[in-house]
Length: 236
Image (tube, rainbow, N blue to C red; front, side, top):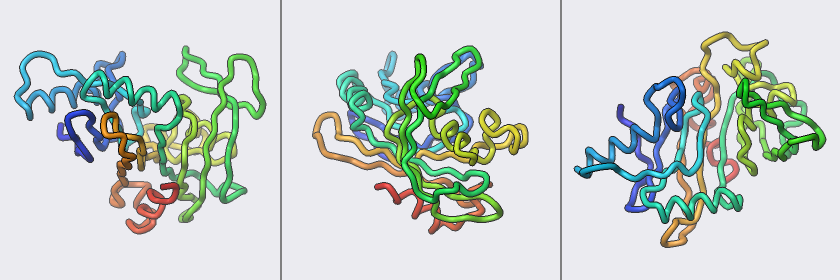
């Protein structure tokens, strides 16, 4: 499988993750991003033995877009610290059902994850074992009862965008877990990782890596390429 490469040097590689592929090996045994990229590096650079590749962050299996990996242990350590210190900035776009009552807002909720069913519950106030979940969103365009929304993520909680948007009454198109009342089975979730901004692990240069979904794919096809580009650039 050919994974599009957005950027690569001796320290990091940024790729466009296709929807439907897990970030790392899971119980399904399906091909995963970490293994696929390791194999790709091994072949392209004719590397003998094992290839090192560090998983810096994760994207949910149904989500596509920009994803960064570390090619050295030093880069992995520094990128992981950037994630922990919240200096690893991420933006997304999504298509939601309906139109949020407020077209632009900051959301702060509290999330509790049930690992047994791999699902989170969103609360308006802190509760036992909850973690804060913060994002900003902006509704940019509307079509056929759906909205194109740009999102800046401040905390990387499990299923955060999906759960928070559903909590305000606008679940993501295609989301079976948090929007099952309005979405058909086996539909594709409309969530895309549009950018990563982080200091390079060795040069310290602030770098931004971008990705935009194809306007040929549903439900992104509701919007023009220009509109999708606008959403991808909104919070950068």
